[in-house]
Image (tube, rainbow, N blue to C red; front, side):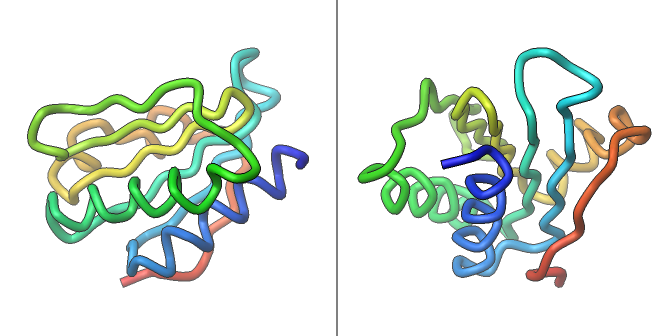
Length: 115
C-alpha cells in the first residue's frame, strides 16, 4: 500500500468516527522521516481514543503501527506508520501544538469531516 493511499484511508477511518478538521500534510519534501501527517481533531478525549483505536484496529490486517503514544489523558495521540504519522488531538491540544502553522509551507489536502 502506498503512503498516499494509507493517508487517505486513515483520513476516511477518522471521518467515520466523526473526527473534525481532517488535514493531510504532504511532508515528503520537508522531512526525511515520513511522507504524510494526518491531523485530526476529536471533540473530547473519549473521541480521540475512539478515533485512534479505530485506525489501529481497522488497519491491523494490512499494517501495524511502529508505535502508538500519547499523553495519559488522550488529549493527543500519535500513531506512527513510518511513511504516515497520525496526530489525533482534542481542540485544545491542536491549538497548542499548531502543526499546521509549524508546517505551514507544506502542501496539504483538506478532507471531509470538517465540523
